[in-house]
View 1 (cartoon, rainbow, N blue to C red):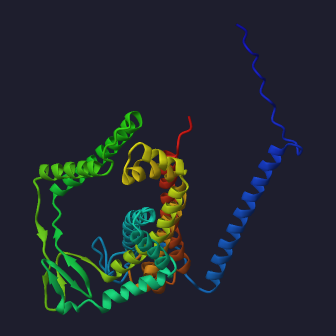
View 2 (view 1 turned 120 degrees about the vertical axis):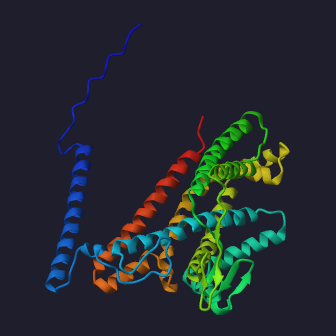
View 3 (view 1 turned 60 degrees about the vertical axis):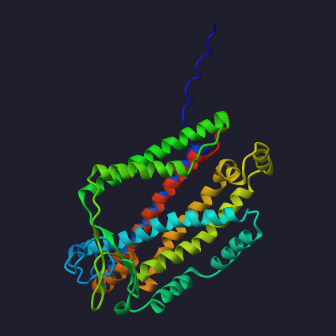
Length: 393
């Protein structure tokens, strides 16, 4: 058997006639120019600030903040440093962004699928929703919901009670579990259940592709997650104590609370972004060839099974990229929460800027937060897009 001779390595051409050499040189020049411009802008800004006697630097982050934050997931005091105040703002921003993305995905998908309903009323309501919410500026929607929550709910002294839940202008106050070590077992159980549900879905999908036998892809995974979570909670001693809110003379004390600002920004962003997500889902499903729907009907699949097992999996490759844009828009639009007083990272930065005068530093921190969250969202969605892509045989 003859062996083909090895091709000797080609010598790299470093002359101007080499296209590869010219391309490399142009890239080096571009990087040097961009770096030089950035250095000049930074040096010029620092010099102008020095001449005008404006302090610069991030040393203020270790100084006491001197202000309180009305809504925080962790305990914060005015004597705490600025860096902790920024962390509170970031946590408030992430709370809105993460919950908003989850709720937007669910609502937008349901509305997008509803556009293909055989019921004319359902199709009309879904279309009316899309046209209404996507054509009204999101800032106006935030202000509208905030006005509704603060004007039409009773005063705190006259809070309306529904069981152990209180409704007032201060928001919704509800019983909150008292955290114990046993809850950690429940959380661990939910995580283990989520992993088990993922393996089950992979197994069910492989069985469907091999035999055509349809298994539940939603209720069984949900049951697995809940069952394992309950088992973990029981293993941890089944802690069941709650902090029940009590109506005081001037406020409702104890328990957990959802402020009007949080509810307004979350509801406004979800309803607004879901209208765009619905159109993304509708266009993705429409891109699937009609023959796929006819083949599903020929196999005897119901309308729901056809949508879940045939159309949506093929539409994902079209849906995911524009869906990523909507998730990024929702996260960045959360900065508008400052208009209704929600203490997100922008609001905290504005307060710190007014007290310290470190405008460049505070704005840089805001940019860093939104850049990081956007890049992480893009990274995850790109990974999911690669996993969901149809593999060519």
